[in-house]
Image 1 (tube, rainbow, N blue to C red):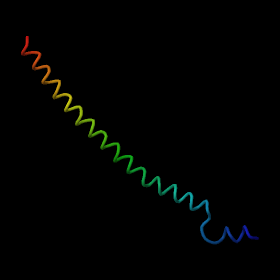
Image 2 (tube, rainbow, N blue to C red):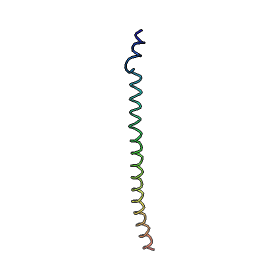
Image 3 (tube, one colour):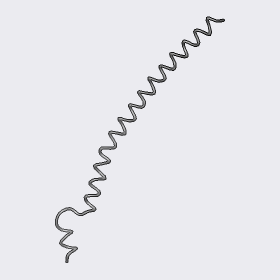
Image 4 (tube, rainbow, N blue to C red):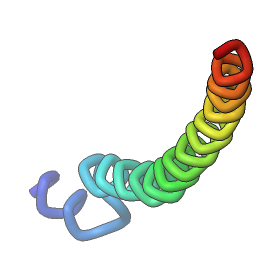
Length: 65
């Protein structure tokens, strides 16, 4: 009888756990996308900086020849 009355009223512990998990997933997915795009942008900037340094080295090497 006790199990029947607790299941009928209010939220169960399992329901709360599932709601918390879904909430965390809803927060984690946009944060993951944001992290991914920020890292891509940083890598692009690093590659441009390295490419610039290599261009300077190649020009210096051509001048020496």
